[in-house]
Length: 488
Image (cartoon, rainbow, N blue to C red):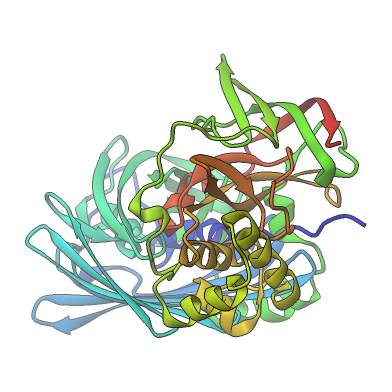
């Protein structure tokens, strides 16, 4: 029987958020002569778009722009998605309300994300180079303060930026945006490339290339400044203008679609199969298409030769010389170690144990018995504790919270792991815990106190922004498997 994989919930959201963080509320393109609008004169202020992932209709995006007085405008974006992932239906709803000034700069915002019955609320205000952000999940509240220089825009205004500041072939823009999905301030680069034809629509349109948080996309606008078409993830995800009725018809289309759209887009194909992957103790692998270096440490040693990363994976390899920090025992929104319920449960699970090794194994046994392995998305360990079901990221969040509460330094890591069911690698989340001053890879989803050697770590961190670099890898990575051997 093969192990069941789940794709990290936050990576799923980032993958899907990529297109509507750019295109919601966009208006279509421009003629050979420069065009420019104000928010009051935008050619479209109520826009519906259908969203497609791969060849499947998965949802809609709806954006409205309206004046709210005091030289302020409200941009409301709503994105609804229904798709199939690893045999489960996924329901996701994002709603953001951004109050902007006439030049599109951010004044204040409120956002709400719903995934499988779990909720994350975010609100904030920008002033004098500081953005105060409040997050609330499962009764737990966190406040973050971010600093920025110059002007700050909301991610929802990205597509309007060229319209308000001028569209003309060859013109470029670079500006800072706050993305509530990644909870970080990033840089957007836009360039009005040309006024050309596209086989996705009749006639010509302006193509605006957009790079945002590692994602590349193309937005097409017509000569009146109206939205024509958008694509990202190397064309795997697209948005096209539709009326409200057609856009909302995604629900029946998505229910009829039986293909696994997320896995189809994100799978990293391998050149050969690995039977009994959970028993692999050592493996060599070559990866192409990865721009950021896979870190050497617990479980792996990696080096680059031209554009190929060669990694030696060994389940017995420990991460040495990397000291634990306060964050590895600390509390966060996603890993709320200080929460009273987490503290009580950790004590209950480990009260009969004498060492950290015994505590780790006790926590893994508790997770195996009490948390169902389902593609159910949550925003934190508290969501998992409440619903008693989770995908890999949820298992890891709860494991990390319980391990830290038991005094075991633990960090969350993300990368790739081999799936026998799909004959390739899928994006996955697991943990690293410290024992005797050395980091060791632990996989709570698979119940592995020592993770097998098909785990390839790419990034670490439990914050939403830590996953963002993985999104740019979707559809670009290939793997060549070298020699491997099983654990004794």
